[in-house]
Structures are given as structure tokens and as C-alpha cells.
Image (cartoon, rainbow, N blue to C red; front, side):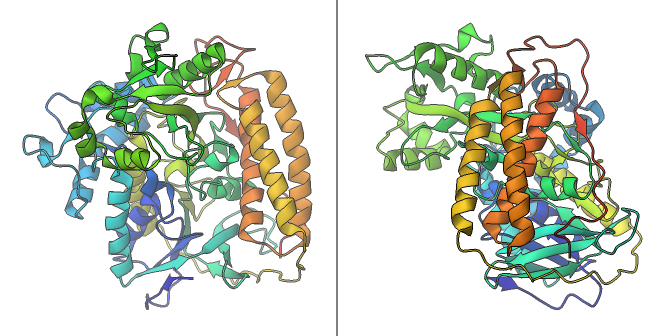
Length: 546
């Protein structure tokens, strides 16, 4: 375990669950005035932020405007984007880029560009407005902010610590669900669950991509924040809208490597493989924007062509862009593919769609506040109305920065309350020899069910079958969780099955096809539609609570 700890005063800290861009933005904005503890369930550099290739949106150029960005966000979101949220994000995009530049993020330069930055274009954007650091933007941003957090005397970083559940009024045996008081957290190396009281808790745990068999997400994306907030009584929204990235590398040695949308933005073409190896372009049959159509359209087009022609993948051809250009602008992709025997300057790249982004999540306002006082959420964990039925490319990193800043400001403005002493975690559970076998089996079954029945194209019958299997798995997992000592694998499986149920229930509730949700039973898009909001009343006291 790596723990960076410094004297941060005697007051209870703000506990941030997740060490990606959203969590670190909140931490750095708070740390001048409040002690902060950041929990990372794996290494600090293993989150989804570091995997982000494309870039971050900034309304910066003379040919761009807030109105244009809002319009592109709404078009991609297929009628479910909250205009107020989209406008707020667009209006604060330039400031977010400037904040990162001032911290030393090494964006790709262009002396003639706004702020001296090179801007690229991605699918769904009318103009070039994506600031990037070659094709490894997320890593460049994360390394800078993580270094600053490590050096800050008021920030404690706890590596290999995983939140188990939120501490709420039910743990204190109070009748009303009134507030979040902290988290129970597993120290993975010691195997002990610790009680962490908190002045506020921020969920910044990312999405739930690992609920699917094939995903571009890292192993951390198990929907922890969404599941914990749901169990604590918070509403969740739009969970049926899971974005499948159109272009994940198809290779037996690499199932999670993303081929950034920026490659298509620079002119790469999608083609069907054929006997002569050259391929035939097919996007013209699906959308007039060709390869620059929004992700949901491109992913469905690829899925359709693969099934129609009985092929395992399609080709992304960037050979006409030239070796020098590809090495300069896409060095990570060039190097990784070359290591696998694919020279992208001379060969097209085999690609398939894969689960990529969770467009729904915990319902919050523009300050990151959830339904539970004292609990905040930021980033992919949330539903704010920004992404609607499909996320516009590169709005995700922007969302983390903008709402990370507003969340921190809201926490600083909130009145502090005396914290009660929550009960310690019940450590009476016993070990179980077949634990890993059970977890592994249930994990595989859940992800296969979701991939086969709740993927890019859905039917009511498939969804009902999925829900039936998920309920059986959930019952098994809950029984196991109540009886035996918790581990990271068990906690992640528990969170994934909760998220899977939310996705399927939301999909069954939407009787139309819109954005990322396409149903063969309801193929039309209704003239008027609304977000899918699920709510629950938590049990006053679950059997496994301490």
C-alpha cells in the first residue's frame, strides 16, 4: 500500500472516492482551506482518466461559439440534453482549459492557435475545438494533477483503499435518511474495513463499463459510486444509455485498447474487409456525416455491417494520412499497434465497438450535490443532463474539471455540522475457501449476459431474460456478501450487479429508440421524451450493516 499522509488539522476531512480527473480537481480546489483524503482502490495512476486519448473541449477559436458547442452537444444527445447544463459547461470550457494550462499540462502546441494550442476535431463537432496532448491527453492531464496532489500538505492519498459503503443515518439507527457522514473503506493490503468520518463525501469513481464483456475501460470501472449512492437512497438517471465506442482494437492480445475518435477526425475511413485487403467504405449508407457521425450512429453502423456480412471486425484505414503525420499526432496508437504487428501507416486497423462510457448515473445538480446531504458526485459517476442519450466526444474530461470546481466551491460554502461517531464495521464474517471461484464464475456470467442481451441492439425479450438472470445473481451475491469477509473482487461484483440491474430496468422503461438505446421492438423515436429517473426507498436496516 502507498499512503501519502500529512498533518491536515484536527477537523474531519472531505473524503473523495476516486483519484481521476474529477476527484483530483475537487481535491486541489479544496485543499487550500480543507483537509482532503483521496481513496484509490488500485494504483493512483490506474483510473479511466489516464486512458483518455482524444482530448478536452474548449470553445476557444474565432470560428467557434458557445452556441455552436451547445448545439453539437444537443444533437449528439438526441433530444435528452438539458440545455441549461450544456450551456453552463460550454461557457466554462475556456476557463477549464486555462486552469489546466496554468498547472503545466503539456497540450500539443500550435503558435497560430488560440492560447497557443493545437485544436483537433472529433465526431459530432462542427469545428476544431479539442485541446489535446498528442493522443494521450488523459495521461498528460492526470500526471500533472497527481503530482500537484502528492506535493500538497493538505491532501492525503490512500492507494489500494476501496469504499465499501456510505455511512448514513441508517447506520446510526436513526429513522430518517438525513445525511451522509462518511464511508466504510477497505484497506486492501490489511484486509480491514475502516470507518472514515467525513465532513463531506465526493463520489468520483467513474462509470460501469466493466459490466460488459468487452470494454475500453480499465479494471476500476465497476460502477462503485453509482451503486453506493443507489443503495443509500439517491436517484439515478438515464442508465440505459451506455455508449459503445465504435473503434476498439480487435486483436487477441489486446481487448481494451481504444482507437481515438480523433483519428477519424483527421480523415481515417471505416471499411469492410474484403479478399484483396483494401476494404470498402460503408458509412455513406448510414449517415451523411460519414465517419464523423456521433458515436451511437457509427457504433450501430459497424454492428449492422458486421452482422450483415458475417465478419468479426471492420477496418479503420488511416494509411493515406502518412507515416510522419501519424507518428506526430498519434504516437501512442502507432507504437501500440506496431508492437502487435500492425503498421497503421501501411495497414488498416481492425476494430470493433466496445462498451465505453456510462452516460447516466447519480442524479446531481450543477454543484455536484446528490439527494443525500453531505454526499456529492462528479464526472462519469453522475447524471447531470449534459450527455442526454449519447455523449459528445471529449465532453467528459471537460465535465470533470468544470463540475469538479463547482463541487468544491459548494462544499466550501456549506455549513459544517458536528459529526456523530459511526459504529465500527462488523468484522465477524469468516473466510470462505471457494470465494474466488464463486466470484469469478458470477463475474463472467454477469458480463456475458449483459453483452449478449443488453448491448448495442436490444429487444424486450432479451432485456427480460437479462433481468431474470441478474436478479438470481444479485441474490447469490447479497447472500455471500452478508456471510463472508469482504474483498475488493466481491465488492466490485456487488456493485456491478447493482449497476446491471439499473441499466436493464432503465432500458425496459424506455419504449422508443433514441441515441444509445436501440430497441427492435420500439424502433421509432418518440416526438417528446424525458430522462429515465429511478428511485428507491432503502431498507431501514439491511442484514449486513454493522
